[in-house]
Image (cartoon, rainbow, N blue to C red):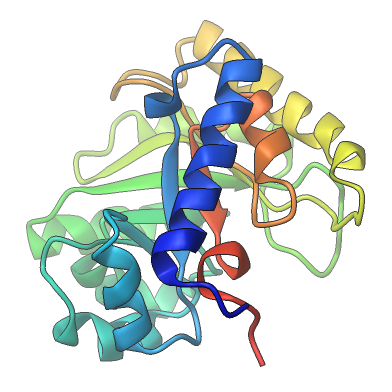
Length: 231
């Protein structure tokens, strides 16, 4: 891609707004997280100058290396798998952790955030496809985790995150987005989600974020369409 960060950001924002309009939603309901893994601080700063405030990284160490060279106004999201032994480092750097995938990890993040005197927003990564190569909690395990997390003081579980199986045709991913939305609605109806504000759904990436917005995403994680291809 040879176009500028301004053109890329504008194109993604226009597509998000159009998808929201098709679903009868306001574009302001959807947060764009620019996934900056493997890209240098200079590339992140160029996108930040175009009004993007939220950036996603896959690894704690990579964010630790880049963040000190970037504006404090940036909100950092951990969108990759978090190992429990890195929870203390993660809560110091990230405002959001999208990949809470077990009760034990949730407890570790809660303890680490409390010890650091911080409040962290979290999402539970859900496995809807039973893929052995991906992390995530089975839907039937969600109520117990959310009930336990309701007593936490430092980790606020705000909603759900999904990494569906890759499909070249985004329409083939739509059923997974529908299932996640309905699962969140069910959990909210049981009083297990929503106590900390609106229920967040982190779903949709560069090739399928339009469909995700149509199906209720409140957060989309877009990398390639913002930064270009990774080598």
